[in-house]
Amino acid sequence: MTEEDLKTPSFCSIHFVSAEAAAPLRAAAPGRVVAAIDGGQIEEDRQLFAFLAEALGFPDYFGHNWDALDECLRDLSWLPGTGYVLFIDHATRFWERGHRTAGTLVETWLDAAADWSRDGIPFHLVFVW
Image 1 (cartoon, one colour):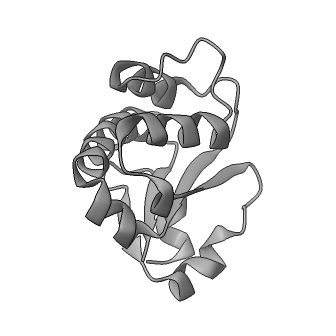
Image 2: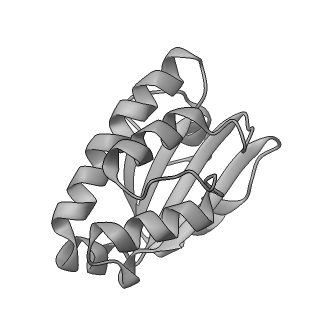
């Protein structure tokens, strides 16, 4: 994975990288929103929703459920950017302990990424091993 990948709007927006490979990718390019959460602390949906709400500054009306997450990921009007990248650190632990939550997140992210790519805006999720 390269910096160029993060600049590309695409429905192929899920990436898996080592911590070493992720380090240079974390720098925010002008206008790009970069956020990170600690996947090692997530075992279930409610924990994921809380981390995402904080990292992405979700509005108070965020309902802490999958439908609300889908709605917020497709909007992000409160967080304007030329692109979006979310890093999930300690992804191995997240997938081991919260694999259903991680899988549903991937499905939800891909749906939102398809919408963003139609608008020409990069929207990427990076699992950091």
